[in-house]
Each structure stands twice: as C-alpha cells, then as structure tokens.
Amino acid sequence: LGLSQLAKLPANLARRREIAAMYTSAFAGIDGIVVPATRPEANPAWHLYPIRVEPRLGIKREEIFRALRAENIGVNVHYIPVHLHPYYRDRFGYRGGEFPVAESAFESLISLPMFHGMTNVDVVDVIRATTTLCALFEHGCRRVLVARDIASARVARAQSYATALLAGEVSGA
Image (cartoon, rainbow, N blue to C red; front, side, top):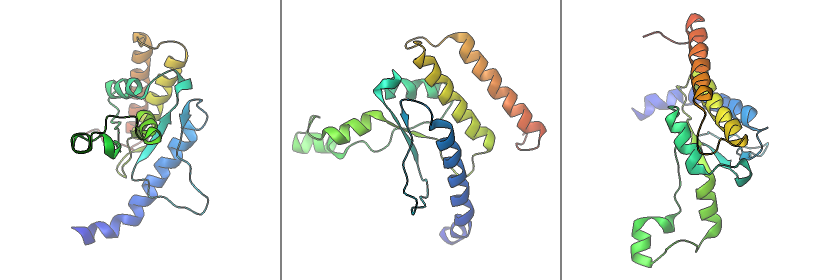
C-alpha cells in the first residue's frame, strides 16, 4: 500500500498546493483571518490548512467552528497543547495559563478541509461558507445567523454544484 501511494505523492502534493493557493487568495483580504505564512524558499506539503481567527473579527473560534459545521464544512481543531491533555493535567497538575502562547494559538486556530481529492466545487464551498460567515459576523449577526442569508448561501452552493455538474467537473452519482 505504501509504495503504491508513494507513486501518487507528486500529484497529491500538487493538488494540495493548488487548494492552499485558492484558500490563501480568498482569505488574505479578510480582516481578522490570518492565513499561514510561508517563506519563498519553502514548499509546504499542506497536510493541514489552519487559519487564525483574531478577536477583531468579532467571533470566537468556537462560534465559527460550530457555524461552519452547521453548513456541512468539515473544519477541525488540531494541536491541543500537550499540557491541556488529561494525562498531563492529572499527572503534573496543569490547569491552563502555564503556557499562554500555546493556549492562545489553540483558542484561535481552526483547520479548513484539506485533502487532495477535493474538487474545485468543494474548495469554493469552503471559501463561500467561510467568507459568508465572516461577513455576517462582521455586520453584527453574532448570535443569530439570518435565515435568508444562510438560505442564500445554500442556494449559491447548489447553483455552483449544478454548474460544475453541467460542466462535467463532478459526477451526478
């Protein structure tokens, strides 16, 4: 299995890099969302694509996480600081506050879907859902997402999917 996957590595890496470029381009201009920085000489594999949700966005990581999950976007939270895992809490008595930089990063990072099998329609769904939610929260819709805006986002996704389906980019099965 490993050797057969190794042959696919260049194509899989190239696709993840394409997706990362699409995300970076889409989110770079959103005040309060920080995209991953890379050095010019680096060529990351993009196993994950984390974004940092800053307080000035007016939404906490937990809120955007729940809202994106409600929109069927498979976001995740990764890298819980080691000292906050139950073993270390129980064994060494950590309670939080001991490593504020790690805890701050944990409280603000969310990983967007990232896998080589994503279609462009999938990527656009993630981008649209994220930018729509950021715009809603930016305009004061902090606790209640207006139903018509959510419905509009769903209609737009359905229209995108139908367009891609007609163009042969996705299968109707």
